[in-house]
Every structure is written in C-alpha cells, then in structure tokens.
Length: 319
Image 1: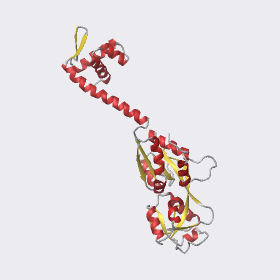
Image 2 (image 1 turned 30 degrees about the horizontal axis):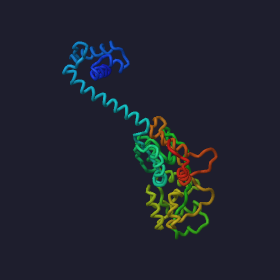
Image 3 (image 1 turned 30 degrees about the vertical axis):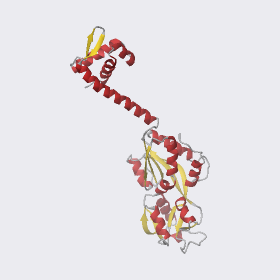
Image 4 (image 1 turned 60 degrees about the vertical axis):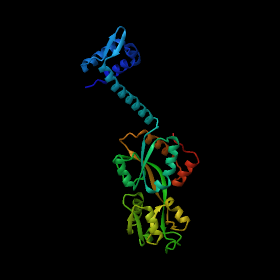
C-alpha cells in the first residue's frame, strides 16, 4: 500500500531538488528525508533521483511520478481550504423543516436574516405536518425543525420556541358568525374541515373535543391550509387554524372568527433536533439565532407576529 508520508517527502524533495530545503519545509532532518526517499524508492523498486556532483536530479521515472504527486497534494490543499470554509460558514448546507404556516409567514424573514451573515450557505427547507418533520429528523433529511410537539420521541430534543393562538374560522355569513362566543359543544354540531392526523393543530382540536366527551363532525381532512381556508370561505364547514395564518382573510372579511368561551387556546411550537447527532456548523449558527428569539423568564406567549417584529427591529442578528 502506498505510504503517503513517503510520497509527501518525495514530492517536496522533487519540487526543490534539494533534500535540505525539503527537510526545512517538512520540519524534519535532512537524514530523515534521505531515509524516507530511499524507503520509497525501495517500495517502488524504481530509482527516482540521481546525483551529479552536489546537485540532485529526477530520473524519468521520478519526473513522471512527480506530476501525479503534484496533483495529489494540490487536491490536499483544496480539501483543507474546503474544510476551513465549511468551519467558517463560507460554504455548506442548512437543512430545515417546519410547518406550512411557519414556512409561509416566518421562514422567509428568518432565512434572509441568516443569509445576511452567511450568504454562501445553501438552504434546503422542507415543509409538512409536525409528525412528518419529526420523521424527517429521524431519517436525517433535516437537522432542525420548527414544529409543534405532535408526539413524544425519545430521540428528539424539543425546546419551547413560541405559542400561536388558535381560532375558529367560518364563512362570514355562517349562522354562528354573529355570536359573541362559541363552545366546543356548538362546534361539534357543525361540519368540520380538519387538519390531518400528525399536525399540532389536529392534536389540540382532538384533545379539546375529548375533554368534553364529544367527537367533531369531520366532513374532510387535509394537510393543505389554503384548501381549508377556501372550503370554509365557501361555507362548507368550520375549522380551527393558527390565528396568524388567517389574519389577512379575516381583515378582508373573506373569513370570520368567533372567540371560544373560556380561555384562549394556544399551539406550542418547539425547536426540534436529534439528541444523538452533532449539528453541522450551519445548523449550529441557525440554532443560535432561534435561541435569541426564544421567550425569556415569565415572558407572555409570543407568536409569529412578535417574532417577526423582533427581527425587523434589528434585535436579532446572526452570528
């Protein structure tokens, strides 16, 4: 097997045609260079150097081998540069996953903030239900997820990030739209356009109905939030979505919302990553930004709106 240490000594000796110079460059003694070259020649069973007086010359075989050695050590330098660039975030890949609402309303600004400091890092953003993103973590397709804790998993670390208020939505002309407040018992009698199993929203709605020992009248299940909003707007039923995700439609009176009786309902959103995997340099840098956005002690719940306000105010920067 080729001894790369001997090849390196040969390369430096051949480059300078001077064993003493090669020794200084390699931080070894001149006799060590001579010994390594001799061992390399014996392994090759070829004469690579010849002497004429005090000068050293390459044989034809040595000249041919030197060309290949130069290519090898040029690549070594290139590899070292690539490693250095990856450590300094001058290149690399950041793989993220999140829910459709966060992908649409939060991630564009978050990614722009990251790219202001790390413009050469490429980003791959996956979106789907929280359960799908947990599976993507386990399959090593993403490194960090911003998701609801749809289910516990011993291999995934969840840390609280934000809370999103959930609201009941319906068509503006719906018979419940003029109510001052609405109960889950009343909602149980309405056709429900439901998020699919695996989403944080679905988990909350199922839990709320279970508490009152009712079952929702599910007309349709879908993971597509935009489709839910369109169906509800057409009067096909009611639904339960993140407030920020329907704020524009409510302002434009394309949808209506009625407060729930009792306390408000919030969806807990977490930062998720694997417990037993070291994050890549881009992922660690992105996590540092997210940690700056996390609520501090005794802070009130914050949602997409307040997170974006922090970023736009310049309070959150990468690095």
